[in-house]
Amino acid sequence: MLTSMISGLPVMRASDVTFPAEKTICITGHREKSIIPYRELPVYRELTIAAVKLMLCRYIDMAAERGYEWFISGLATGTDLWAAEHILKKKQVNSSIRLAGAMPYLRHAEHFSAAQKMLLEKVEQGCDRLITVNPDPQAFYNKGPGRNLYRDRNYYMVDSSSAVIAFIDGGRSWSGTHQTVNYGNRTGRLIKSFGLDDVYRIIDESGPDIREISRNIAFLDNVFDLPF
Image 1: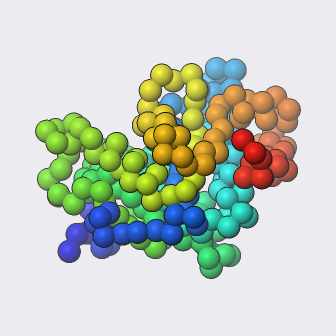
Image 2 (image 1 turned 90 degrees about the vertical axis):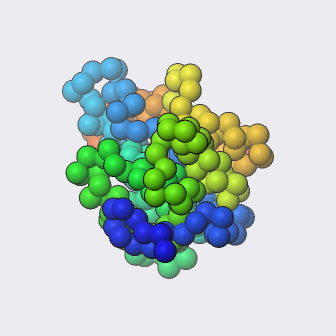
C-alpha cells in the first residue's frame, strides 16, 4: 500500500481513480513567490497575496454554486494549497463538496518549508481522495524519467475534470499553470481564470483596505454564468 510521506495516509494510484467529470473541476495557479505586489511596492506584498487568496476563494465558491462537487488540487505551495484549505472549510458546511489531492510523485514535498508541510498535512488529512500520478517511491523530479512528473500530474487533473479554475499571470512566458491551462484549452475544458491585473483592479477600486477588497470580491458576478 502506498502512503503519504507527509501524513502517512493511504495514497491511491491515479490509474485506479475516476471522477464524475461533469461535477469535477481542477485548480491551478502560481506559487506565492511569483506574486508581484501591487504597484510593485513591497509594502503591498501581504495585501496583494491576501487579495489573490480572496479572489481564488470566490472563484471556488462560484463553482460550488453552479454544481461542481469534486475539486482537485495539485498540492503545490501557493494557489494549490490555498485553494485546498478553503475547500476544507466549505466541506464543513456543504456535505456535497469533495476534495481530491493529486501529487505528482510521493516525494514532491521534500523541499517544502516546515510551515508548508504543516499546511500540506492538514490538507491531506481532509482529502476525500489522495492520489499520486507516479507511485514509484524513488521517483524524483528532473532525474531520468522524472522530467515529466509535473506535466503528467497537470494533465491528469485536466483529464479528470470538465473545467479549470486558474490564477494565471499573462505576463509570464511559461509555467506549470500555463501548461495546465493550455492543455485544458486544447482538450475543450471550460477555463475560468483571473490574474494579477484583475487583483490590482480590485485594489484600485477598493483602496488598500482588505475589508473593502473582500466586500467587492464577494459581490463579483458568478463567472460561470458568463458566456466566455
